[in-house]
Length: 189
Length: 316
Ligand code: FES
Image (cartoon, rainbow over all chains, first blue to last red; front, side, top):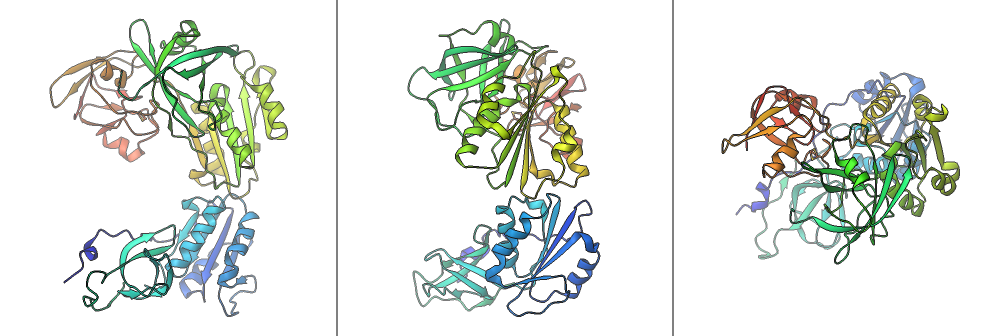
């Protein structure tokens, strides 16, 4: 039996092509991991005096001696500090996993930025951050549904419902009524 | 009287500027609804020939809903509403008002709030200020007025706000330079404007040159519907026709003919009154529909917009 929620209307963010906002006085590029070739070309299309590059990675690899390198755990503090020094006319361009780009979105919004200032590239992978609606635990890098919640070990159906607040997809227990009725895992796209 | 209206008593009337009167309203029975900073109420004013309804911002601290205060400027070419409030309404009178609604909410994520008020446009900020002070928000109030007509509350504001208060009295040739006001603002700044269309446009054009994103500009323009040439409106479903006079809005004419249209701001900003149009040419005057939506000519905001053609058929 197919669980009916698989057919529920989806609520996934839509990512439009990203272009440079030429009206901006400053451009902040943020990339998780090693920047793709495309991102590098995009980055180099902007005048040096008007841009900042923030790389978020656990290993120290730099492509540009001017870039700022931080780990994931340092991101919020560093980004908040950087934004505090930038002009109102700033645009952010962010590349990374879906959870990552929405984390950046939330830090930027907390700093008073508005949605049109935050340009998001389509996520680099189909991996999802999963929010368990039963124990509120977050499970990172989920690739299949159902997935096991790392908090309560329940089998969760990964819904196509994206919560911007948690930067995560919502997961609900799938075998609550009948523990034997567990569908085969399907790859998330 | 529509069912959700509240009956209030005018507890006090005060002249707060040469052309501005303040009214304190208290509940006749029970208590008033709580409200949030930036809220307004629509006051019903029975004029000699017809009923006027205007939206007025609540001036008081949102933590105190024991009374509502509003301020009304006597409009030069008033259609009757402000004249009624200034000449007829006395202490002890009763009025009907709508429950508070808010279309001008402060953005609490902002790092800096620039409040720009012109004349009676100070009113929505009177409810912002206590809350901004409580939250220790970073703000500046820039107040443009003509002391021979407006400028209500300027002395108390100067005293309360100190360094955060900037006044520009054009009757003393003091001008506010919008380019300077907007220059070099840090990320996280939001601006709120309450004043005439011209001021809003000036800010928008300077902001555009500076590369500001549109969404950091918040404005409220409670312009009363401007008069226009009379026309006839027809309801497609029943064939009923209603005449819209020169000095009344389409919404008012419909209300008079007992055609109910939901509405909130009565100033062309909220979109509540959107009504489909089947035939006729619309003269759009609202700030709600996009340029594309306006071009489609299939939807009208009757609180402010009118018809270019002699006849307009509403698809209701
Ligand atoms: S009532 Fe708000 S747009 Fe007409």
